[in-house]
Image (cartoon, rainbow, N blue to C red):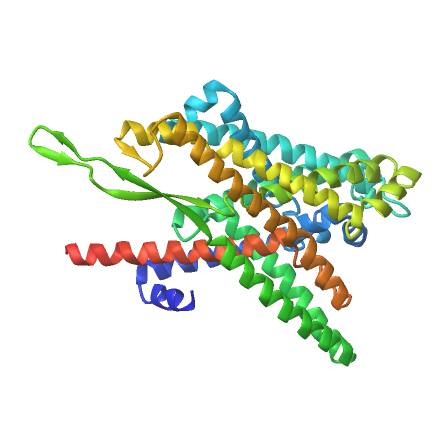
Length: 432
């Protein structure tokens, strides 16, 4: 990847695009530190650290949520809206037709996604105000901003948080337009690296006065390198199903006679099963922390189903397996693939075209999904236990399974995009 970056900087046009992206990323990081008027940052920070799901969101936003910054919501409303629209486009016939209408259909679906993003951002902002406004022993909302009016202060906080979420969406779109990388993925990438970098720096500072911390940090880094290597290896793993196209004579020309393959990725579902599983388990905890923070039910849930407990690990593993199959079922359509292969005169060697091909593809996809889900469950549970056994270095929350997978995926995607940009420039130079 470093070689790719070096070659990219040698091209003036690509270098200009990279500097534009870096400028937008700096703007994003500034927004992660500018506090929202009327918010108590100390209360936000302590409350976020006590809740696993909020800690995950804060890590993705680069600490913006724990800082009580204007970009505290980050890209989470848009990601949620995008997932909902994708699922609805498979369930609603009119939306499914839009997804197949090309550019115009995608524009309409993108418009619906932005509207839903605005609604979800407003709901999340109101939830944050209610949650932190009722925080004990100190409220996270400073009503002194408008002479003691809690309503006006809360309204301003909601408006600023929603505006920050939509501004983050705009930044992501501008970065995507440069062609260097997917903007929203890059914002998440930078946020995770920022959180991890801050945690590493704090541990290095602590290790100067405590030598034991230094050995813990070194052991943590070694374990991290091994886990990252596993993710890179598994991210590129795929099963290639061979497809042979028969020769066809049309007029005086002969078509077909080619061999290709259908790549089915081991981690084709990405991090969605992890996000769904953790969201489902954290949702009751968030609701109870908002309305019944001191109840016995909240205490029991945090003790027995909180992150790090054996019950939590078992339930998360089962939910990841379930959501992996669910996501795969919604995204992989063996019947459509089989029909498309047959209509183009293709077939899988040794398999009859039509229904038999669809069943064969479905059987392969189920097996691959199972192994991919097992790896995701392993990645969610085992590294956390290993990191905690090494010692409380403060890095466990900074390097979540979701964060590590996102970092690897985005880094590989950036490398591919830069290579594609340079290849296109080389073709243009050849044609001249």
